[in-house]
Amino acid sequence: MSEEYVSAVKTQHAPFADWSPGIHYAQFQTLAPCHFPMRRLYDFELLYVAQGELATAMHGQRYVLSAGQLIFLSPGVYHQNEIVAGPETKLMGIHFDFFGELMIRREEDLVVGEDELVWDKLAAEPIIGGGPAFSTDPLYTPSLECVQFMEQLIHEFSRRDLGYELVCKGLMLEILARLLRSQMTRRIAGISEHGERIERLTERIDAAPAEDWSNRRIAAELQMSIDHAAKLFRQVVGIPPGEFVRGIRHREACKLLRDTEWTIEEVGARVGYPDIHHFSRLFRINEGISPRAYRKLASIL
Image 1 (cartoon, rainbow, N blue to C red):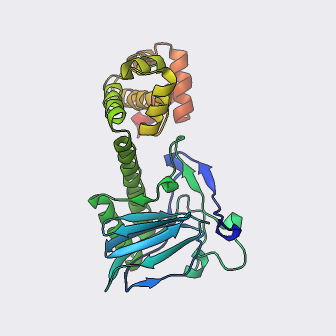
Image 2: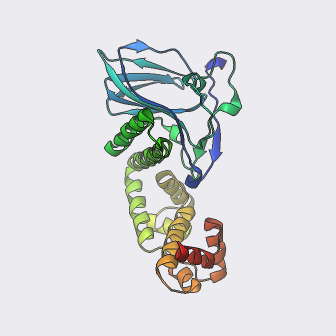
């Protein structure tokens, strides 16, 4: 591959709470068969085929999308789109960034010019808990709900009624959440036998978070070595088993602190942390405040 086709990639470790997408461009398009020039973007683009056929050359591959499919285009990546089928192909396109970091004043600001890429202007792609990024496998088949959210977003962006930015941000988060879930479904399907067993195991962890869900226990449940079980669990779920267990326990602890009058020690024991000091330390790491302060704040709100 020649040097001009080398892709720039900019990533950022960020929890979901830090996501605050900015929408730069969103519209429906009806196009006749044609070739578009090679280009790079400063932001992300979701390109959904509602009717017809689209081909995108990227990373030395040619992705062919039929109706019902979507491609995820990343900043700094050389790509070329081609409308394949005639007489008309109908598309939905949304340009965005994950953190509201780009100042886009006109459509021309979305595309990297002929001269040189400005690295600081590239939007960053979030790294999610060690799991694969959205761009790892850029071809998606979004759910009907996801497509409906895209349609609503385009209508809001086009009308620009009072508060449309807030509505578009909320819709974009819905779209991204559904794409994440479809990505997880693909991973499970790709490791079908083990994926189904791990999915059932996550349901058991969710139902009984206080049990001993150590890596050793999880490996025994899956009848694998500890290292192999941890690797497969991460492939299917997107995060390591220990992180998954802590997340479930923290969610349950928050619920018990809000909805019961049990002592902090009792709540910790109920979610698998009989040592109150260990429980308080982990809770503060996750929530930023102590369990006692969380309960007081929840009672006020």
